[in-house]
Length: 279
Image 1 (cartoon, rainbow, N blue to C red):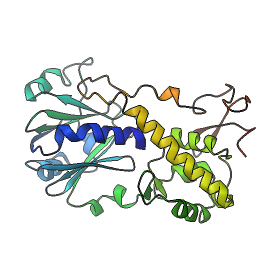
Image 2 (cartoon, helix red, strand yellow; image 1 turned 135 degrees about the vertical axis):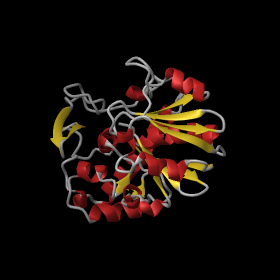
Image 3 (spheres, rainbow, N blue to C red; image 1 turned 180 degrees about the horizontal axis):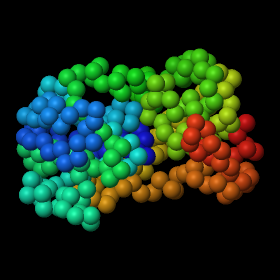
């Protein structure tokens, strides 16, 4: 699942392609990708609008228009693809099972931006203003913003009785963290994912804050080198396995103490941790 670093890398790579471009036409090939809105509403709010800025909040990619905005959420497997023009789009997209899958396509002044998710979990929506989007309105402090301070983070921790891992996944508290980087941050901070958030001492909260910022920054650097290649329909992020220390490494030795990494289930998701050095 694309988390904050992946979406930020997409935003930075997309800016020079679409910023300042006008959406001339919109194609909805699979209406499920725009639910609960309708294809008609999406087209009405996006067609003939200028893309002024590309931003990110949490795991949302935002196309800020000269009136209103588009929100794109990639969920598990969503991604962007780029076509030179309308002819290439209709030649390559959705022609057969081996063709490039596209759910929604935005014809711009120069080029076509496609949103694709074969599993149909990802969503594209249009809004008159950010506060209209329930998803955006519910987001907590962004984990890479200047507002994500030790003091703010400590206050959020102190107000929660949830296990640390569940707390970090709660987008209404800290926006942008997913399963991978939550596990990684807790490993770097040497904290047991089952501990209650409010149980952390000040120095532990500081240590976890530092770990989150560091893990996300390093992952972002990895996601940008190489940067996403939207022209390649098979592109994905490579090299993240080089920085992963605990996620997905069940029964393998901890890279810090050598104990076997364990996997437990929390909130229906897998948590990877080292029982010896995470206390």
